[in-house]
Image 1 (cartoon, rainbow, N blue to C red):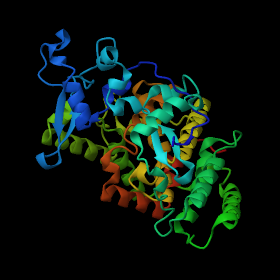
Image 2 (cartoon, rainbow, N blue to C red; image 1 turned 90 degrees about the vertical axis):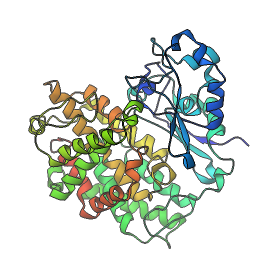
Image 3 (cartoon, helix red, strand yellow; image 1 turned 90 degrees about the horizontal axis):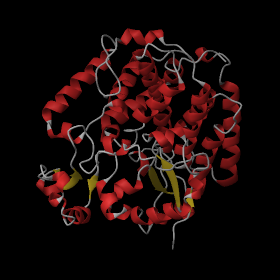
Image 4 (cartoon, helix red, strand yellow; image 1 turned 135 degrees about the vertical axis):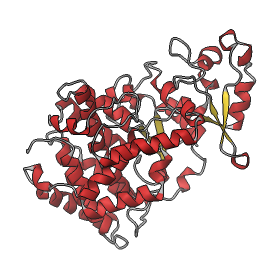
Length: 425
């Protein structure tokens, strides 16, 4: 039986052959894909006369996996001079590794409803909302879903709501719908939507929900949302400043968010890790020169960031709204899609994507000696979303512990205001 798909309503996408995904992702392959690529006899191709391998081993002998090799600049070994895939050109789209065929889509089980579809905003075309409406790609997406989702996906358990409560899928969907509805009013600025969502999600994080179901839960969520709309002050600076510890945890998270590793860097092993650690430690200090953790982020003085206080551009307000609603509807922020974290905790981690992206956008603006523009925000989101939900670092115990501490301190909304540069509304 074909999977029923819930598709994002606000998102367009068609591949524009920018080759960005071929230059920034590490593509792991299955043993079957490895055998298929080896059978294609690429070593006999004139373009590869100086190559000895196209596939690199990963892991240990007891836990071996494989990835496509990279060129010296970080691009995929099969990326040609025109920025196109040699496998696709010679053998067709179906011959490519499955990871390449799926990007930038992400599929997540939703119980009896089937599957929900989200997208990765590390793709600049997704950020720009270019191409065909995703809702028109149902046939293609259903075919891809059958390749990646287990047959018994309808039997998967829903994510926990908080540390205490795991409800059934019907009630879990009520939380997802309520979150999406919080961002639906187009006349309210995005930062205010985000603060309202965090206000009532903070109560959910601390609540005991095991006795609230169905219609009672629906009424409860309506009351929480109505109260949250009244709680947020007109002057957002009244939200307060984040704690010193909160700022420290934010800078640590920033380091892991913007780091960019290539296959060539991974070959260096300990030297790469040591260089990365030194760069993150510089960032944690919050003083001196911002370190090089990403090729598109040049080193600038940390204090220079204080010169950029421009508000969120109007186009960027729409972008963040679309980003959050796509991630929420696609359940791309909790459960199996996000290190098996509860819905409430996962949403606060998603909320941090706003100040993280705004920090990077200001970094780009200051580096150009420019005011903050939508182009900076759009570029920043492709950088920050690259690792969100995909880097193993964010599933490490010390990182998840820091996330929980930020929630407990009430620092997440304060960080959102502190780093947004929003003027009082």
